[in-house]
Image 1: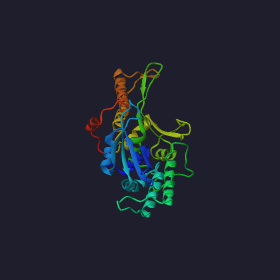
Image 2: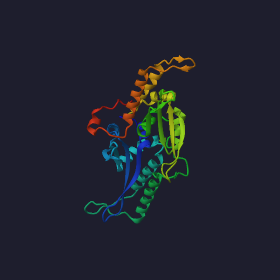
Image 3: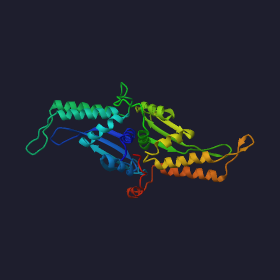
Image 4: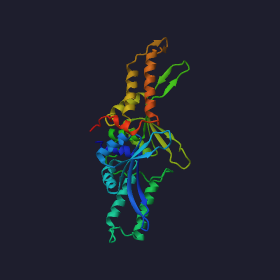
Length: 323
C-alpha cells in the first residue's frame, strides 16, 4: 500500500479537489465533494486504489496521438474520509482540502428532510447561498490565473517544513520529468547528461523541496495570458544520484526512467577517460553507443504516444513499494 505521504505528493502534483455542482430537475442544486488524481498509467492508480479506494475511470485522450489518460475518483463521504487523513501532509492543495472539510462540517450541521418517496426536499435559499459561497471559494482556489492567495498557504502540520522522500516520489511521479539530453560539440563528440525537473505554480513547495534535496530553481513565464507564473526545480548530472537514491524505493510511475538514469550515472562514473595532450581523449564508440541506447530508452518511456493498451500495461507488474 502506498503511504499517505506518497499519496499527498501525488495529489499535490496532479490532483484535483473541487466541489461539483449538480443540477436536479425540478429540485434545488446539490453539491458534491470530489477528489481526483490522474495518470496515463492505470497501474499506478490501481496501486493507490488498492490502499485508499476510489473509482478508476478512463478519461480518454487529450489529443488523438497521445496515450489515454485515467482518473481515480472519490466523492462525498469517501472523499471526505480520505481528505481527513491526507490533509496534514498536503502543501499545494492544503487550502482546497481545508475548504472541503469545512464544507462537510457545514453539511453535517444542516438537517435535511425527505418526502414520502425518500427524496431530499429542496434546500432553503439561505442554505443554498452558503453552499454557493463554498463552491465559489473552491473555484477561485483552482483557477489557473494569477495567484488568488492574499496570504501564505495554511500549514496544518507542525512538521510541514520537512519534505519526506515518499512525498517527493509522489510529486515526481505526478509532476516530474526525467530526461537524458544529448549535446553535440563542434568536434562532433556527443555528451549525455542526466536531468530531473519538477514544476509548479506554487513556488513555496519547490523551495521546501530544494531546502531538503537541493536543486536549481528557475522561473517560467505563463503559457497563456492570465495564467499563473510557473517555476521549475531542476537537478542535473552530479546532483541526480543522491536524489534518485532517496526516492527510488517509493517511485512507481517513474521507476523505469530512474533506473535508466542511474545506469547512465554509474556508467559515467566507471568509464575512465584518458587525455590526449591537454584535452580529454575521445571515448571508444561502444561508450557512445551504450549512452545513446539509454537516451533512446528514456525517450520512448517519456513519449506521449502511441501507447500499449490497458491490458498490456497491467501485464507488466509495478515495482514493490517501500513500506
